[in-house]
Length: 138
Length: 418
Image (cartoon, rainbow over all chains, first blue to last red; front, side, top):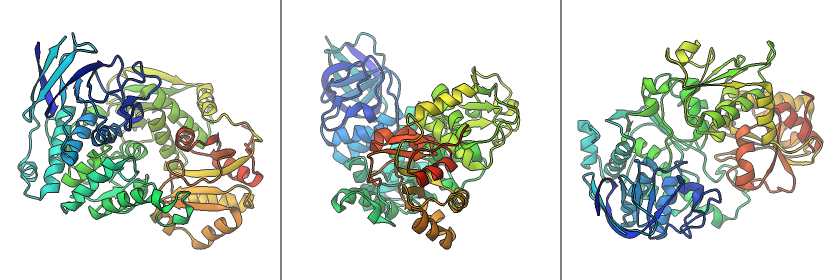
């Protein structure tokens, strides 16, 4: 199944979906060294985001999340891609800065999230012109 | 939707002002897309909160801009960093641990930012004016600029404050626009005596409650007594921006966009009305300070946000009246410009006789300065009390400025009877 999406940070990536059941702040919520969710109050506490396609309805929290996402991209502990239910300027900027500094993309797209479950195989293709698609395989 | 760019925006994007400005504009456009802004607006100044070292990526970002000879396009001040560059001997860190923080501060200077290193840029010569469009980082500075001055900024942060400075532009959205500055949650003080005194702790307590209950919505506050000075509004805003994400509050009859309640609400109705009773204020302050009277203290920490010249004058008066004799050190975080403007004799007496330690360029709750954390630290700052336990592992006693000075003298927590 291919779903149309909107691109906020370009790139192409594939990975296993990790669907979050609550918003996540990268700052304070993700350990950049290990890529694990470290906020003990988060329902997916302990899950590793690295190499997964992170799926969440919305992001949350401090503007310092930009730096933390950029730091995970630098340390290669970042998600392969991020699929959001609504646009997030803070993550977008983190991905953009890191793509330019380290030459590694973490595409960020927005689309409808219904029917996407943890463990699905997702392929994200995000262009520089706003167009994107998410390919979902169960 | 696509952001509408002006001719000069497109020129920057095309690299006509160099690669650094082009990169900055590319990031700004993506950010504007993500917040749904239809276009960009001019800003007259920026305040960049990028000097606290959080990891290699932030240093790489600034160094890349500097390597391609980038320069800020509007006057830009810098927030605190991790190191007191003027008094490096105060740092409880070795030279190697200080190095990345120093490099980050220097790299920002290389971009043409002013080395103000203060979280209170509104106390300096570059204070913006009513109605001016600005792009500021640092939560207390943002809420102060919007609320107390009536300048206009959103909550900018990591990378984006600097990107705005490098382009002189900001997305046209949020608090830059009239209609989004309307009070949404109305707070009414109720049950206080008619002669309600404008104490520092009242403003801190109200700030903590506003932040916790309004989140990021615009607050209108009715029933505050006239503040003694703008330092009390600074304390309210800093507390609200700690317990919540307040970027703008209107204090009816006090702040410039709210001469009357109807102005604060722009003639509309609030989405919600909240009551603040004396017990709420007492409870908020109590939660901040679990330390009872009589407990030994290892330090007093003042100046979060940075101490103003007015606050220094109040402190000097108190020191001369109470005469603490170096019982516990009194750390005062302040801007380097403010420190340089003080009466040298009074400052020297405060340091040598009363145990005052002036800290500039940074703040005692974000970096390693306090050497002894084997007891409670006392503060008059809601923000310090809110963050210091997690940041530096301090146990906090909260009190009025006069209580802090009395406690420094006694070496233990002393509070005047309420």
